[in-house]
Image 1 (cartoon, chains in turn cyan, red):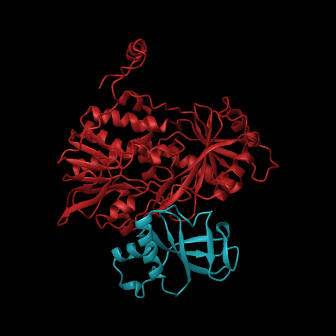
Image 2 (cartoon, rainbow over the protein chains, first blue to last red):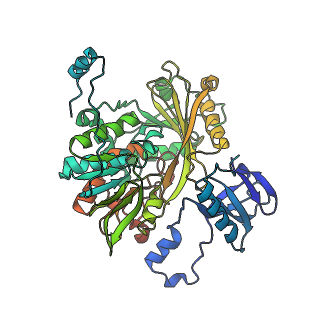
Length: 111
Length: 416
């Protein structure tokens, strides 16, 4: 079970949350200008990386607020949460990726 | 390949079973092939077999990172059925079931197909209406399907609790009597042995690390055992479809989730069919060893970890104990996770890509095992002819651009 750090409530158990898929997918500003390919990209195509993934969660049974999470999908290690509208913690992610490739240790974020 | 028969069994019994020939070779990879199949699971091996058998293309390599059938082929709950609502899916899965019905003879390998019937339960009025509608739709596609009353269910599955006073009472069910289970490892091994006998090279412990392109064309793959060239490369790597596709800059509409399954300690025969429920969400059958094989829904977040969270297990065991109170005494022996690649419409992709010579088969979600033969059969056609067969023509990658989705979400009798 994941222990998820809600930016408002602190660490809580995974069943309190609901996953909202990939983060930072921007709604098209001029939808009537979009080609079919661009619609497909917006609606359906996903990065689905094996590694650090930027995703949305909602603290459904808590403060009911949405936030973003950086999590490694290969280990479930949680790198950090950040609020909606904030930039992802790129430096932490870069550091984590470096240590992950060097040490290849057991995952930490799973409890 | 020496044929398996009662005589070969007897002959080998006299030799204390020390003299069986290997089921398939383990050749060194050649430099060039006509086609490379990335992924040695059931779907990949079936693709190789039908390429050789139906299309005469035998200069083929199946490249597997680990061992044969060690991914989702060895992790599923082995249920086979073709009771799908939409015409496209019904045709695909019915083809699959028909191939399964003749597969043991075709491969000369006992895949232990047991057509014991698959029941989908209804727990409220809306479920009943929906199931009846589906039963009729399935019948219109020429596929067997019936609606059962609680008493009829009880006569087939004596252990089930049909008391009207439980939280989610059993009010009816649909049944596909030709549905059932098969031995999942045997499906992979049978296809591997039969493909190998027709000249396909099966290369295990060899990971594909890159897909080589020249202009818009595929020319081969980089692997941990060197570069292997082929004008056609087929990706059949359930659980890693997006990772492999990204090597060729192909974007997929796939998200990967963990799906957990488990078995109980083995007991004497107690459950003679497959019981599935969408509302309380579990599916359960008994293996030939006597273990009850249980599964349910996916964990709700992207992951490649092949494990999931305990509260998902708790929910599905609660569902099983509601339907079968007697099973609450059983202990769980093993639990595991597999990674399922799911599409937004819960239907697979068996398709060409925008890269010439690159083909992809994936996104089968939680229901890939039942599709194994038809998946391989249609994918082999797609690779050999460079165009899809009528059966998999609706399952292209282009459907996400054209909008003609095959929306099996909620239509597939169980969450899918």
